[in-house]
Structure formats: structure tokens, C-alpha cells
Length: 68
Image 1 (cartoon, rainbow, N blue to C red):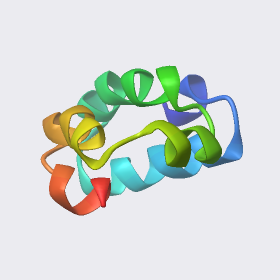
Image 2 (cartoon, rainbow, N blue to C red):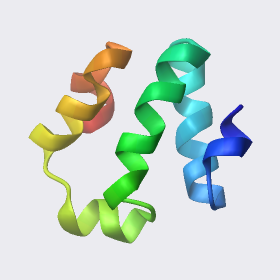
Image 3 (cartoon, rainbow, N blue to C red):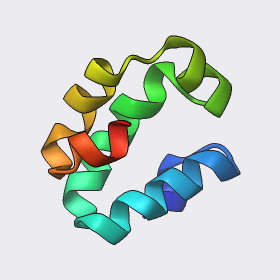
């Protein structure tokens, strides 16, 4: 499942971490939103705020832990 939604190794790693914490259905809905504007670690670090990541990760129930 994760391999179908990702373009690089970093995205795959993020997807696997999310899958280890929750279920496939939830991750499948969240990954496209996360990677839409933040496809690489550099883009994530340069453009994302904690609040924006928390909003995206909230459906997974781990927004406070993984956003920071």
C-alpha cells in the first residue's frame, strides 16, 4: 500500500512509520495530503509548521507526537 503512494525512500519511511502507529485506511487518506506540498525532507523542514503538520496528522491520532 505505501509503495503505491510514495515517490521516494523518505516518503516510504514516513508511510511505514505511520502504518506502525495506525491502520492502512487512515494512512492512505493522510499521505497524499502530507506529501502534496512536502514531497521531500527539505520541503518539510523549510515550509511546514508544527500546527500545519498537526492538522494533517490529526486523523491518525498522533498529531502531537509526530508533528514535533
